[in-house]
Length: 423
Ligand code: GAL
Image (cartoon, rainbow, N blue to C red; front, side, top):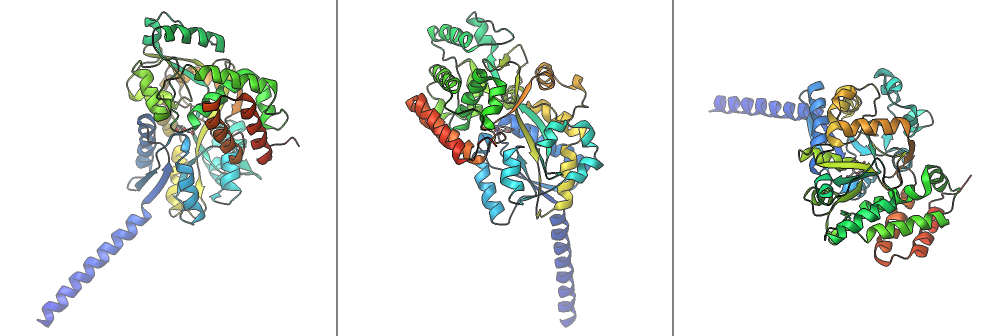
């Protein structure tokens, strides 16, 4: 009996050791990646990154921590709570510029990865201008998975063809209005908007603002060298109001990707959106220039609004080694070539094989190489979070009251509160 009991205890002990060992091994084998990539196209692209990672580092369990909500409007507050509480994910999705440097680097939530730029040769293959937007005091804090072009104007080609509307190389607000009136006469709302997340219509405004003021004034606005109630800004607000007159009635109950789906279904014709919209077209199996087309948002040809997606190393990451491998994978040529065709963004690396990319991506790569590059405020890069919030709040009111003077005054106040003044 005693002997049997001893044997049993030894077996139990052995079992416990095996379980404990497995738990330790599993713990060492995890990686938590935090993002808001949950739409069809976004999730497919994220999965492609995971696949590249798993091929490079087999056996690591990836915890895919997503919080749904385009533009990260719901994800960022969740992340902030975790960071403030000292339980960071290993790595998270981030926009360069103010969002990275102002919210995460300044608060010491992230660790520099400057060494990876040297060891992986990224300094030679990633544009210095982009690296600069992720650099503070000589240290680099993120690696980019891709670079979205924010000022896309997508359209349902079949629907426009059926209504006798042809789109040229560029489009003005007047040309949009002419097309929109034709569609209106046929009972079709010209503009597909899904602003259950207010950022989506804020982006429509941002694009219209750029189209009216141009890239040089854009820089001045964000440098505090041009007033937010300048006549040109007010003209942009009036143009935005005009465009809103042509939006779908159910806009406030749709998410951005549901608006893209409405475009694909032919319920409306155009969508002003970053090229993550392209990811939805690809996911649905649609073909560039056949089923859908694109042009720069009215008035913005010659500019590329940068909405870049990077990943960071958390300060106090639970799995630092796996995270470094993740960042290396994200910056690798395999990942950049696998992820971006599905996501709609262009690779941050300039040494990719362009043949592996379709017509839209090649068009966007040319735009990036030749056009004026400006940062997005709606996606956190051009201005502090305080201004981003003020802009969203002001847009929320404007969509309803269409009061240009009040809109301008709110942005003047927002810029002042955020400290956006000329040096
Ligand atoms: C942006 C992000 C893109 C895309 C988009 C819609 O902020 O940079 O990658 O995900 O939101 O969710």
